[in-house]
Image (cartoon, rainbow, N blue to C red; front, side, top):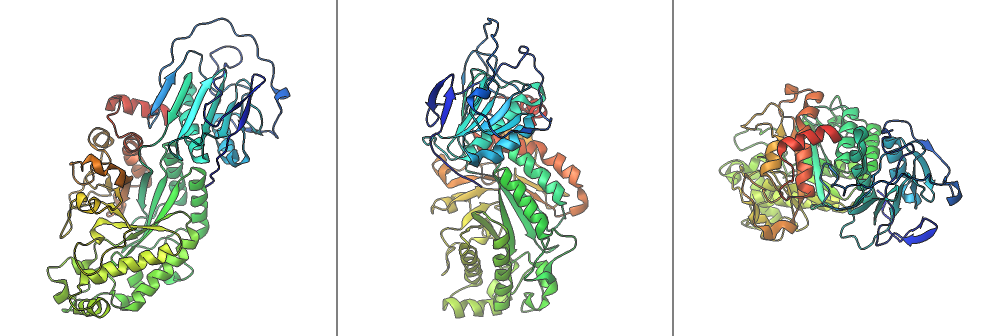
Length: 539
């Protein structure tokens, strides 16, 4: 990901303006009148740049009055639009895409190729052009942008390349299928900084191409995170050099993962990897049966390692260290949910070796929950050593006890069904930051086991907001800033219940509804029927 700020100078009709605060450029009239056809999908032409002398003299336009423009119709909807009178803009023959900073070359080439424009690189904009510019340091967010359609040009300005990219997504939706970007100024930014989609590839293998397609879809919808749950009881799905014996067939090669990461970076999406532990490690245990946890009666709970054994921590840390070199980005998901030693009425009696290890490490009175919390903290220290911020599922956090979860571990809140379940406010009231994975609305569990039902976009659109963390009840508004965002999650418990194509179709409208509510949690302006129709038009 690239980030750069700084005021940029653009030529406007022979004058100079600074695009640091005010936005300076606007729309185009396509040659031959107002009825030009969209050129999206044609191959882009790449130029070496131009100077102002390359711009053709504008042809006189017939006198015409225009109605005041209406706000763009996009998903997610733009937050603010100042209308104006004019023809708006859509791609035309000879139109170019220009940039004012080489750091925007990737965004420029991608957008030019999508809209069928000539990519002219660093150049002054002409009539009919789209200009991408870095500037506007006073924007309220690094993801904010301003798009101006005026004077036969489009300008997208933002303090970072991420904001510029989001502006290009708005423009792409506006002109899809021959549409027109309306005259005026858009000022836009997301309400929530984390907007995610999580995919379970451990239980069900998904092809690299399918994953790349979903990332492109997410990018166009302004998501910025893609969670990859690649280790569980059913499989370990990424090539490993440190422990090849744990890898399942089929799996992604590291070359395929790097390609996925490149596609994600081009769409300004962070990939958040997850190796769940100390539960959900069945794939590791198959290769290392000596790590299997056993109760006093000899029972072996599935997928559960014996955390009293140092070798269990060693192998997980080996894997965390290895994949930290593969996956860039600021976040790492530690899992930490459903450790079966804590899903019995008396963990200390059922697993005396864990109780002994807890007391040896943390002193008299320490419990299995303390030992498990210590495990999570130790894994957090491992990823923190790679400059990652850790997160874990909410049922990996326990109240009381001698050992407390590290303060920087973000809560991925998904359920309130675990033993000793706590309401979201129990976490928020202590100052913890939280990501909303509410299983009532945001869990797409293949085969619908355990009373899960496939979530619908309509229900998310009409009933969910980021404050609705558990069930259908919202937490108090005062905690809004601690809720970093939300994530949709695809879990493949019954892997053969749906094909890749069926999953893509099933999540299509929920993803569109969710991005709308993460971008702007307020009541949407469109009805669900109108929103569904819009989705068919713009994406």
